[in-house]
Length: 559
Ligand code: ADA
Image 1: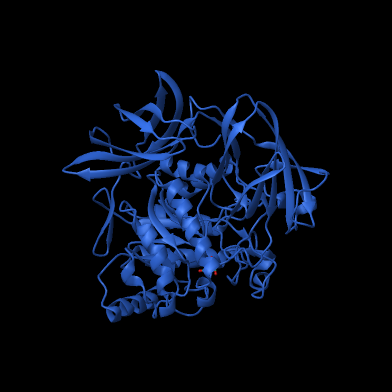
Image 2: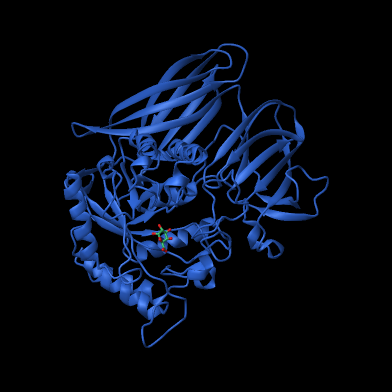
């Protein structure tokens, strides 16, 4: 299933998940034959022969069309570069594992067609965001694939923005329609939201895309909140001569997030963020977590008493966001960049690729009420004036969305230059793990920096803190890497943070994650078992002592 609900009742959508043919490649071209099979979606590392494979591989499946005309091929995530072929013709490429993409093909005939994809997960000059890192770039078709039969005029997407004015909710919708035919077409667009129906007649010129704006005021809805995550279906339907020809179904919510001085508010009520950073990584499934695994992660996160997730360091699977919408978990979603140097982030290809991810994230995830914060450029060169244009470009894009707060996680506690451009001052701090500073020391340094920069008082969030523990390694001396030490660290720091002048925190991190073997930095040297072991559960979601320590501190609070 594409989402947690049907996205179409009129449009025919077929999921192409299953067993595809598979072939590793030595050259970037389609193979003459396929010798193996691979499950879609999955990371190829999860199949024993490809456990360590970094390279090129081709996938093939047969798609049967029952329809003459146009189709849409929808790919939710391929890691990290995809070249897509339809009946042996290349129809396009996409870079980046963590964002969806699509192709529209016209004039298709009924019957069997061949869909082939060359997938590349190598670290090359062309993959500026996928670099050897403190997490793993898996290979493969890691999220679901769909084929849809399109009518000549169809709904490309419906973007939703909620507005609260004079104690009333209204919705601003942008319905993107497209006419693929060579003639002008007239259609009726019917939008339904919270028992309200709006009809509009739309004339679309041949081969043109049209944005129809719909404003629905005075909606009788209840706000989305963490305690009561109220959701509403938003349906767009297209009619031609009274016949439904296409539709689009989404789920939305109404909420406000804002700041006043150092406090964050959700629906005008003070919100203290108790969050956790989470990588899409699992000991069995890699980055291709099943719905059950995603649900279980959130179940554990809520069981701990946490209320927020940071999708460090890339946009997440939409089904995970659906689950957050449904369960009432606040999300800080971020673009794809966990990188430090000025040289790296000022590279034109880096800028192009990271901005494209931001565009795709905003376009695809705009309607999720759970996303309250947009982030970008984790621990990049925010202390270098030459990085200003890069930060500006990223933040300008994020700030176009007035219904969310914008931030980036910095590790430049005493030297950061761009804090005046963001809504939340977010800092990654690792007391008791790296260096000798305490939370209080860090906060003093951050306050001093705010003072020197003469910037407004705003919420401060500790966007990362934590320490490593190897699952089942116990030591009476509480040495680093023991479960005992991690539990003690988390107890101490959580208690401090609960009483500090901050608007919230995000523990680093939910589960242990695999790290890259390659690269000059040599991640495995500081990461036993080639994993970032700061998870409070291991890669199979087995809780460490740290998990129970977090739960105990949070349970003891008088919330
Ligand atoms: C950084 C970074 C994380 C992780 C962490 C760590 O703060 O943002 O991705 O690498 O350090 O574990 O050291």
